[in-house]
Image (cartoon, rainbow, N blue to C red; front, top):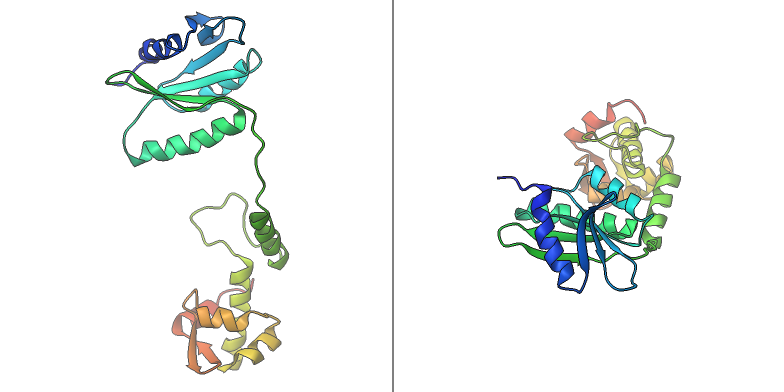
Length: 220
């Protein structure tokens, strides 16, 4: 039987009372409102699962206090753990805390406390994307595309190499690189990521049957 939001309240209330809070439900817009002495109040928003509505409500409560948690039932299996990790990242970025409740015994686990968040930038990832942007010719993809082949700068270079070999036959890697302007032609043919190339002998490559099919595609 699927739990209801009201089923979450008793365990969450018990958790907070165990930390010295006085707890009341449905105070104004808050599902759970807790006070301890002169400290800022704690608010917990209850939902039967991670939803956009849950995060909208929790963010709205940040106008009342910085100590806002979301609480959901703890699920089982890899799918829930994956969802939990993803939503922990979201909560961290929003400055929210996160609690799960094990419904069979009411055990509450605080996975994350509220707090300010300043994301660290990855110079490696930024540099990689800027390099890909600079190398890619034109704008061959449709924004929002999924489940289709994305045309990367690497694929564009491989296509130029394949097209040249289709017209000129087997050749040395240095000759291919010079003729096509693809500096990494040797690595592309040697790695053969798409299965388009075959090594004839040391340093000399030709198209595979699959490569000949690819070379007949419209130019990028």
